[in-house]
Amino acid sequence: MPDNQETVYWNKRSEEDWESVFPKREKQMDRKEFHTIEVKAQVLEDQDRQAEELRSALTRQKTFFVNLMASPGAGKTTTLGRTVDALKDRYRIGVLEADADGDVDSRTMAECGVRVVQVHTGGSCHMDVGMTRRGLEELGAQDLDLVFLENVGNLVCPAEFDVGAHKRVMILSTPEGHDKPLKYPLMFQVSDVLLVNKMDAAAVFDFDLDEMEKAVRMRNPSIRIFPVSALSGEGFDQWLSWLTEQLEAF
Ligand SMILES: Nc1nc2c(ncn2[C@@H]2O[C@H](COP(=O)(O)OP(=O)(O)OP(=O)(O)O)[C@@H](O)[C@H]2O)c(=O)[nH]1
Ligand SMILES: [Mg+2]
Image (cartoon, rainbow, N blue to C red):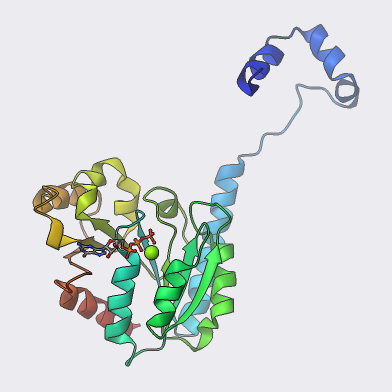
């Protein structure tokens, strides 16, 4: 019998039935006197506090930390590769690669000549602050100027978790469609920067940049939007000058 049918069955039991099923428990306590704890709210509050502590520690040690989020295949690794290539002579850069499994992206980033740590989330769809802290320790972030987290590919869960980054950057790629801000509003709401990637393919996918921007600005009027192509490098000057400004002001 499936689990949900089992649940319905127990709920339908009479008071007498209940006593016969849980006699010990009934003796130990009055079933009507119990405490309810809101675990989700408490866990998230705790995560937020830890994220704030991590961010302060990174600020003290002068490590600028960027949380990069996007769907699978939106172009996170390609974007990081091009970004790192442009900045690695000027800044000491590290990358935390977060994936449910595998090390493909870590190998790619290591070839770019930066320090990399692969974090396996064990199937989890996002990074939390505990996993991030451990990854940063492993990376030796204290002597790095700039660290990127390539978060797990997903437009939902990573948006909910503050991992202690100074800035949240997201990528939306043109094949995903211009309606995504309407379907995944939180991700667009919490991000400081939106890189609209694969602009070289926008026409093929009938991607309307203005429509997308209208939908994003309803939720997040101050988000910075940079249309780019990580493949060709189009639009990277604007993204890189924003990032450099942040680093110089940090
Ligand atoms: N046409 C085009 N293709 C791109 C662009 N950026 C990335 N790609 C391609 O998109 C595919 C996925 O790119 P990745 O950089 O691996 O994407 P990702 O977000 O890191 O993917 P996951 O880590 O697997 O979630 C690759 O085949 C890239 O070559 C772009 O600007 N234009
Ligand atoms: Mg990747």
